[in-house]
Amino acid sequence: MDDFNEICLPPAASDLLESMRALGYSFEAAVADLLDNSVSAQSSSIDIKFSPHDDPYVAILDDGKGMLPADLTAAMRHGSKNPNLARNEQDLGRFGLGLKTASLSQCRRLTVVSLCEGFLSGRCWDLDHIAVRQDWMLLQLSDAELAGLPCIDQLQNRGHGTLVLWQNFDRLGAGEHSIERALGNRMDLLREHLSLVFHRVLAPTPSNPAVTITINNNQVRPFDPFLTRNKATQALPPQDFSLAGERVHVQPYILPHISRLSNEDLRLAGGEDGLRRNQGFYVYRNRRLISWGSWFRLVRQEELTKLARVQVDLSNQLDHLWKLDITKSTTYPPEALREGLKQIIGRITEGSRNVFVFKGKKASSDKIIHAWDRSIVRDGVSYRINREHPLLSALNEEVPLHTRNLLHDTFDLLEQMIPLDAIYLDLASHIRPAVTTEEGDIRISTLEVLASQILASIGRDTNAGQRFLDMLATIEPFSFHPESAKEIAARLRCITPM
Image 1 (spheres, helix red, strand yellow):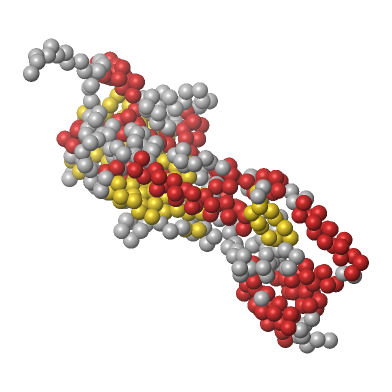
Image 2: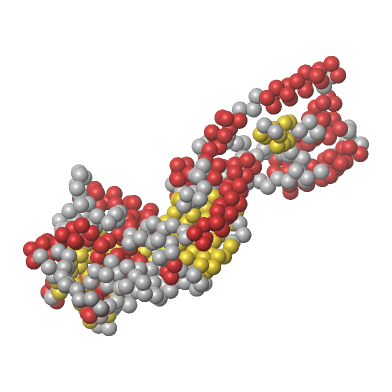
């Protein structure tokens, strides 16, 4: 083996740490990275405390298992774990950098205090101290220094856990009117971010108890981006893939049409703009949301696919294949999965388009008598009024012979003048349709009057009249309320003709 003239060239501590502050963490992503550590430490309760006054601080306090003094010192090392080593399946960490890089991207002084087996220990990275010393000098806090820290009493009362403290904010208030307003605004954004990113951690399951997260004693509520509690949400069949010996579970959803969303659902979904912006894959790593709102360039985002969402569950053994970055906010699927995901996209985006076409009502041409017929023709799609619809057949019989041509000319004109562009734009922009009931359908009383008029025209005692009543629940618009249609038909059968 050739001899080498080696030079040990460690990085300049102050310069490297200042550069690493620009890794790209947002305030919300930085806090979320710290909460990953708390969840991995088996915490059941995580409290985020902040004060914008006097000496502003942000504190993350958990009731996890905590760290002994030597373990805490090791955890404060940059690159404390090899990212290539296998981790516990519930571990949300990866690079051994998050605690330090996330924290120091937001503040100049990071203090971590941990209580484990009765030992209370504290360590601190202070960028100003490092700049003076020009070396990697980690501060070990004395008992007196620990006693003066915010929230230290709350940590001691828990008996075990960890306190992460951010102080000396130089970037948070830059360009802002005041640090108080800037920190308050960040906390509002943080609440929304955590309610989405940790929504599955916040909600209990048979195998995973819920973790409670509070911000200044106000509990963070989970936001389910798939709106699974809404009865109109469609859960499509799930599919599993195998990747490097690990399972990737994929569960597609189609959100309800806007006419079936409550104002609260719409607000939580980010409003009308948020529905379009947040379509795509939702990638979870150990139930923690990593990335969302992208089709990974496998298909274009479009207005009529905005209701499509795909939940993708990964284990932490696949980080390298999904190109997980340090901030844990960017992923990209490996080639072995892209074709399978693309097929799923094609299936669910068609379902999203159908929600716009049928507003969530399933229609089958061989069972439902529609008011409009849709046909594929050489130049595209044709929409024509169904002249065989019982209402139009009855109208045709009622008008005098000399005006029937005018009636059919009117139908032809209506077909030619359908404002398709305007309808598309209204649906795509999520303008709510004007409705007469909460469901957006015709009133039941109106349906009964309409059925009675058609029956009178057909002939109540004729075979055609009886067939009409037999089929009433399969004729639009009666088919929108099949149970009510059956009741209407039963009542009409019992009415004695005058």
